[in-house]
Length: 161
Image (cartoon, rainbow, N blue to C red; front, side, top):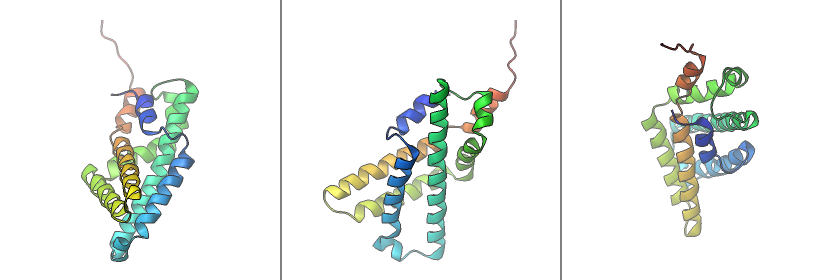
């Protein structure tokens, strides 16, 4: 498994979870306020709200885990951090197990398309860059394999001689 701190640092260069969530909220409000969203069914709106809640909660969880690793000056989970970050780790593992990768990618692509189609010129380019950054962020979070990381830390180590 890849080093958790390096992975989280690669996808969280903007600093704080509040800044990232603020940018996420801005972009997602552009999606829900778009002409394309006007024709959405009630189910599509419910799906969007579910994704919005998942995205926000997992963003905060990812930053909390990253910040704890930095604070402890370690690169991966420990038994103590698993206890401390139980709710954040649960959020991340639920995200990975609760939504299929193809479903996540499809939803992100749809939202990026709406963002890009809603703008012209430089705004369209910025929307595409921002949308693809979010896509990379959430696809990476989905692939962290938090459950196996926890099992690895909690499993007793046996040495053969």
